[in-house]
Image (cartoon, rainbow, N blue to C red; front, top):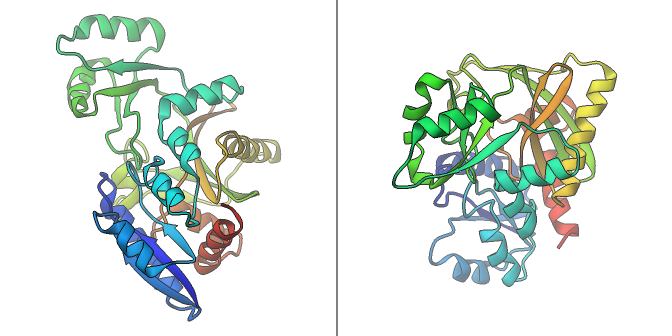
Length: 306
């Protein structure tokens, strides 16, 4: 019987989603009697519980800071235990939106232009607005540098820029990114395979936190996606290129905007959600890969990688 330790919960703004993901995954794994499961949180007794259970591997279902930013991965590396999803460096690079964008730009992957903004005690909003007018143009997207699930993301015009920026002061620094209109398309990679793509048509402004996790948000999921074969291959290839550039393992999901026949890579997620509303399981289902098969593919990838 294979011992699998499931890490869930945590301390990030995505704690609730992590717990829902863990519940969904645990329910599936329990159907297969070959697994002995233990679900724990990364609290002060985490390492003690890990050593006592002695798992074959850790199924890391944490989201956001401390869970997919390299922090928990470094602890697992120290304990010499195998774990799912990307490693320390890949995780820290992917969650940092500024660093990952620099890597994408350097390697000729199109991504929206941006400014990094650091909060200071004395802030001249007029000068900042002038700078944006000159370099990016409104509307712009405001986002924390190292959060996931669209936490703290705002699309704003000049008139509501100041009020939205003030909501993000707790993050100390943020990205101000040129807003790219167009179609929202997401591409998933599983190991060395291009898993597929899905298009989203949110009823809200964009595919934000509520659109992702609320059953009442009524976001339309479109699969198969209406793209030419050339563009279909192109978006999958860009997602694979980004996956390899960041040296990701297991599953990753890249978020794109498709505008004027160009794909703009917004960001790459190294630990996409696995809830009933999540996109990667939906893409897998379209490829006749069941939820349990998807989970076991992720586990298998972790088993053969250190």
